[in-house]
Length: 464
Image (cartoon, rainbow, N blue to C red; front, side, top):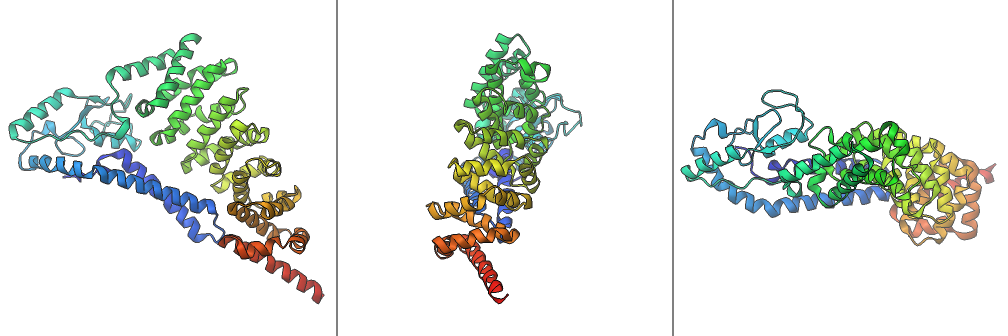
């Protein structure tokens, strides 16, 4: 018999745990292998570990209940139950029988796991599914309950997937009727889009519904897709884009949303909207979707960094945070760093930092980009060295000082023409020496490396 722990019976929690472990493994490998690892990597690793811990605690809090109900359920092992009461996947007595689009009945947790893994066929018949809705089989459930009662067995409650369960048949019907109205006249479209926005904001179960039908997201996009997109009503566009943002918050939807062909182009178009709320929500959606590495690559290849950088350059205070977060997330993978540099990120970021705008976040992005050769060249060409030295002198934020000195260390290694500015700063203010004594461990190491190179340069000059 299969294990009865929550992690094995709840595919949603198990998938989340696997995703967190992979992310933690990647971050730890970066920290261990890279001498120049960033504080951001450590913070991200800490946050990921905390999320994994919370997931574990949540699992343990329900373990006692699961064990208690399972103990009575195990009694059926001593009794031969009818085959029609067994799930074709688990070969066990079904707790929550549901009907798949193929007409076959399965126990909900096991068929849901099959679907969550991306399968779109019936495991028994191999029939391609027209949809992935699961309909409760109350007839079989009643028959199983009667059989259990006759055998003196207590049938445990179904394992529920947290807040994602509990959608009634009436709510499902309403959901699909709203999608249909998105193809109607404008007043009906606006009303339906507004309601979908509200429902997906308040109810995680409605976010999950979009993952049950392959046509749901394309239907959502109907009013703003194709030739209609140029003349679409701003309120309608905002509601649809915001619904996409709500959907992308749902972990199980991230891959599905990003890989729906029209989504990324429409989000890019929304970044150039005349309405700032639409631009903000589009940037936030791209940030949320980019939590998956596969989505980072997909979004980067689509060309989304350029409109994000343009929006950053525009500098609207409502959009800045979401835009910076999206750019940072996307540039975690190497190929997107090159795209960001090519699309003018360094110049835009330096101007904003010099203006004192969003300095913490933008320094973190600049430090990440500084592993790219062209980025280092642009930092030198655009007056970045004096700016970074000034931040080290005047800032009280240790993380900002660390990012600045890390960037300057790379500049020092690659461009000897900037050594003069570093020497003058050291002679006048002793900025680098102070950081070598009082900074974080990484800042001390980078500052000491710069000082050592400056000393060598002086010795070489004296010898010559």
